[in-house]
Length: 367
Image (cartoon, rainbow, N blue to C red):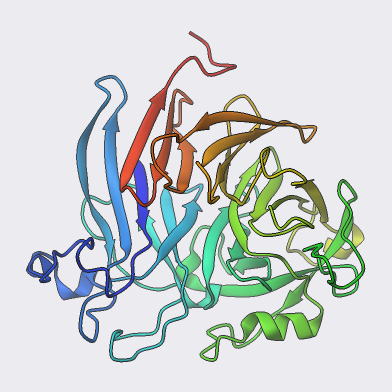
């Protein structure tokens, strides 16, 4: 099973799920449509594809979240659902019937559009990706802005996100600017140097004025350059910043949570943030976006560059190598992930509208 996101806006009706004249809207009940829209329903959402790896074919595909906007990377949960994130802060207006900028939860076993209830306590901002530590249930979130924050959500009850919780922003050093841009703060954030982290409590997280990150900066939260893909594995959190670094070609960060993550004793042994990779050569890594941990232990990263996009792998010591390249189109690669058995690699060609299922003799797999 694979969840595919649709990064569409209200005027994208020609390629949206309801047809160019919205003629298919009657097939979905109003309680399963987040935003019926001003002049058109929300065209974003998710599609679930049920794939048979033995037959190498799609058994079924259907709309599993509807009426949302610009649904981006999101991420899976340890309890069998998918979180879909809106990369927008649109307000109710002529085009929109409701405010947007939320996270939605889609059960993996859904066979029809899920309940489109926004998880408002997880904040309203230009969401990109989420990742969850299965040991603690803590949720981490990225934001796609040039002056973005990295967020942490501490649910009241782990695994029950609709029950609310606390949203916090990452701080490292004194108002650290991790972007390393020329002419920036003058204090570069060095590669392979861990910094102790503290987490700052945020209020008014529904942020009707889209000022959540500015208020976080004012409290001392660290600056990041377009937080994008995020994944958790082997007790560590990894995330990409697409335009970070002196070249603006991208950065990959690693966060090691505290043994007391989110608890009262966290200050005794704080989590640590490290700039794991910063691109110094666009041919090696350019505009890193979505990422996942491959079955053989390396990170696999999607490029979202102006040239032919590729999948780049990062070894545990920070080495880079190209795994695959899209030589046929200029489409961005997105949504890279592996089937649970590690034998099928899924990746989307965003502009082309294709999902690829790639099989092969991947390293580390038993025959």
